[in-house]
Image 1: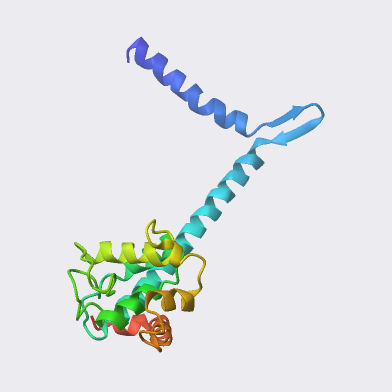
Image 2: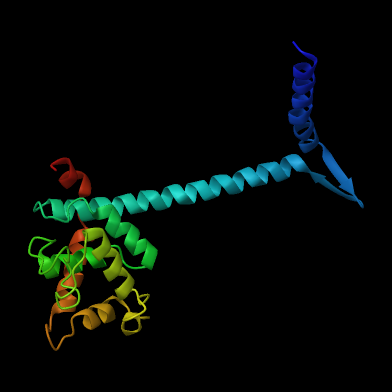
Length: 199
């Protein structure tokens, strides 16, 4: 072993061992005592709580996605498989996770009867075309959340009924909001384990 390698190994051990040794020693300063092992433990607990929250959120998103996919999959509709896109978009724009899928179901039977390129929402009176369902989901989510620069003001601060009555006013379809909210309830009540197994 060369002198340089020996020196490096000895310094590496000191580099690793010293912080570990210091971290386990209590520190006293001006009459106060601080045990760094407690600080390290508290940091680990914080990291574990954050990881648990992230895991819980992912679990919730997956459950929502499964319900959406099970609902569309029950009838083998084109939007089957986009459940996670819907769930993540709802999270991104702080929307109910079943709002956009329910609008898509009411407007195009889950993408089966779209009026324009990849527009399962009838968005823009069917005059707006999208390159993909993902783009359509994000654009409509942004709009109805009130975050869209051009038309967001019309939806801003509204509850689900208000959003739906703005999206398709009662003067055009009197029962539209009730129909969409009924679909939302059906999607949220899906037994995804039963329906996804058959897909």
